[in-house]
Amino acid sequence: MNEYFNTNKKNWNERVGIHKKSRFYDVEGFIKGRSSLDRLELEELGDVKGKRLLHLQCHFGMSTLSLARLGAEVTGADFSDKAIELAKELTEQTGLKAEFVCSNVLELDEHLKGEYDIVFASYGVFCWINDLNRWFEIASYFLKPGGELVILDGHPTNHLFEYNEEKKEIEMIGPYFNNGPHRYVEDNTYTDGDEKLVNNVEYEWAHPVSEFINSAVKNGLRIKSFKEYPFMSWNRYPNMVKNDEGYWYLEGKDLPFTFSMKCVKEKFILTLLSDK
Ligand SMILES: C[S@@+](CC[C@H](N)C(=O)[O-])C[C@H]1O[C@@H](n2cnc3c(N)ncnc32)[C@H](O)[C@@H]1O
Image 1 (spheres, rainbow, N blue to C red):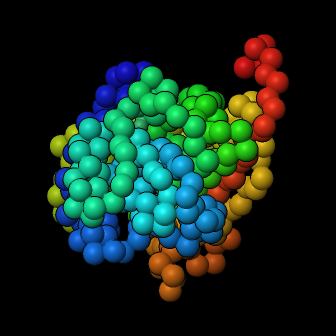
Image 2 (image 1 turned 90 degrees about the vertical axis):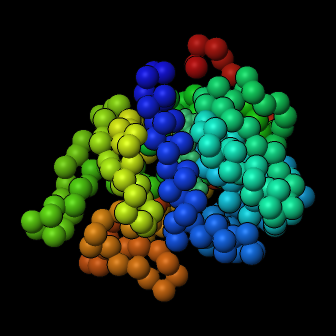
Image 3 (image 1 turned 180 degrees about the vertical axis):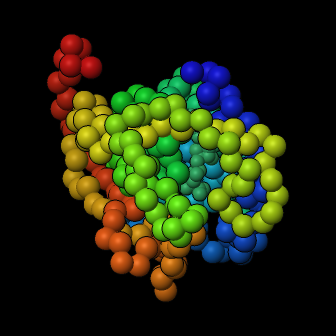
């Protein structure tokens, strides 16, 4: 597993420099006060003022710091040391209060202590995770009883489709249940700019909807809501169109591109070891 994570970490470390310069992330605008959180994230999170919030796979911390601006007491975690370095720089530059921890999310309990009101992660999170049950175990571990897990990401069915250059439309390629690792060689990152990645290999995993539900249930998390949306926050296929709000969708295709899930950590958990 280390080989996969080390490869992904090199890829993400290199992306940080490219993302920092991109219009997509607009770091200058963020420093001046722009929030990097979108409507869905804000709606799902609700009022964060005064809440202790742990942001998993926080990249270089813009959303973590945007949550600090809303009054949350924030900690961000990511396995990319370059991302954490930049997150700390941005914390200083903006004068906000935040803690950042560099760790593989699946081993975070070895690097961080504490209980949180909210554990949050969004957009581009779960494709990097081989063991979804362990991810939810970590999320549950850091939540106080009654605390909430809030996640948003590309919908699991996204992996079923690929853009066909000749037909100029998406087609179903499947599979749905084959979890991976899937090895991809991708020279470009998802932001603007022509800079090519040298560390262009990445390993990804696909997770069916049932795995999200079962991982929550197994780890003492009661599902409050599971929502699906026919648009997404990044441009996955060349034939996607941007709406006025900045979300991307496919005209005439009624497909789920994003999901959100909200869970609450049960106050009394009776876990049978044999269930795990
Ligand atoms: C697409 S970004 C998250 C996006 C975030 N919403 C943003 O735009 O700022 C995915 C993040 O996951 C991190 N990551 C990937 N695998 C990880 C792992 N096993 N442990 C911790 N972080 C990981 C990457 O370093 C990257 O910062």
